[in-house]
Image (cartoon, rainbow, N blue to C red; front, side, top):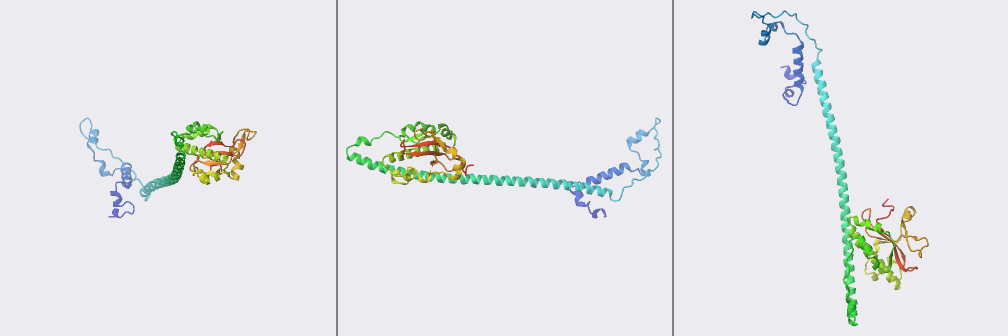
Length: 334
């Protein structure tokens, strides 16, 4: 009855297969049974193998030797209980350490998941913004195409009225270039733009996923510069920015994608990156600073740029393009 009310070794713990309390009790019983001497009444009891071993040659069993009583093994009060508690304490500490490690790992997993989620959300926002910009560009291109078609129709009608129908027939125009290599092959068709840029810097853009889009847009920008230079020869007053704002441009290039100057901080810190080749007739050193540029893209670290020098009112009478390539260093890219 007292055993069932034990403070630590309860009946529930003894029945629990995961609890190791019973193991401590069995070990204690085993130790006591092997170390303590047998009581005198049990010394005469022989097991079958022991009886056979003790039989003499005459077939009679020999009496068990009279072994004096050994002193009883004295254990300090509560020694077995204290040992059990120590083992239980060690087990609980081990469980606590495992729980702490699992909690730490769970926290690391949660932090990693949060960072991954944030990165994916940022990529999603960039993709959405890029899609919206591409859509806006496509809509502007459609508007420009419709305006150009209307103008072509009017001019063709006027030529036909004057009996100059043959002049309205044109050869099939080449489509938009799909690479900067193709852009370079077409540069000779631009009679009012002089490109001194390093071709290799531009060709590196072909390896990008959006390379074909950048090539088509860069070609469109070069054609807009060429049209502006022609208009300047015909007496257009104003620079390229004003030309893009005029009806004469037909919306060929959006003015918000034109920057005429860089910030003072950018020029003070990275101005040397914006010095490009020019004819010696423009500058005796063969190099000149160019701040004006076309924005081919506005998302990502590459975001190509086309840097140019407006010499339409100078000695060449042309627009000099000194750089076509990835975004140069400024306060945002550094």
